[in-house]
Amino acid sequence: MRPVVSTSSLRTVSAGYRARLAACLLTAAWLAGCDGCRGQKAPTEAERTQLLASAIATPAPSAPKKLDSIGHPANVIPGQGPKRVETQVPRMGPAFPILPGEGIGPIRFGATKQTIERLMGAPCDEATETLCRYITRAVDFKLEGGATTEIRISRKGREAKRAADGSIIEYGFFNGAFLPDLYFGMHPGALQEVLGAPHKVEKISPLGADGFSERHFHDGVTLEYDLWSNGKLVLGAASLTKSETAAAKNAEADKQRQRLAAEEAQKKAKRGKVPPPTKDPR
Image (cartoon, rainbow, N blue to C red; front, side):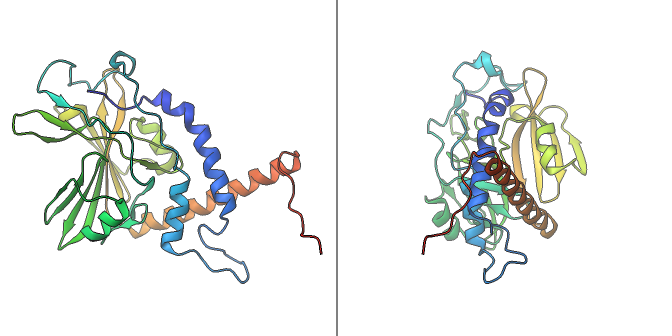
């Protein structure tokens, strides 16, 4: 088994992701609409999600190979218990932002199986009338009446299903993140800096599969945290449900990131790091 990336290793790349995000939003100043602009149209839903996704287009580093360097779920001892089958594929597929209350990237609630497969760029690994599952990409789409009602994303190494012989088939990597750069394997505090404090916390006792220890309820998303061998909690799964209020918060966060990116660009221009815009000679 190869567990998720540790929080410390993810933090080392956070600055780079923020820089990429700022550059992305600066070049697309109309990301969340152009309030007060003249002669400019607000972006379409597809354009907005494409810009958001570009902020996380560079995948996070793969998990280290040494188990002792990152530990393991508290109730999963390497070499003991059922055989675990790791998904041996690299991070792949579109880089989708996780949008509480809305969906992932351009895939929103109400999407059909055909729409999901088109936007994911691949057929479901498993498909039924009520489920479209991507084990290699660690995301499940729950369907009711042919339409998406819930999206569940899991960390790499979490159990996806049991094989006929009783072995555990593990999820692969989800190629995406909570904006601006929050990934599976991070601690609750990091997520709460962006999502705020949960309105409800449910303790899991005894521990569930793969160290499942706590469930935190936020508007539009429920987060599952796994207890790790070092005694800390790490993000193990996220279940998205539709919420208009969460969608409104996403739009406001877009505007805030756009504003901060523009301010940072102005500061760099004043310091001479970025040449000011010039007019075309006539």
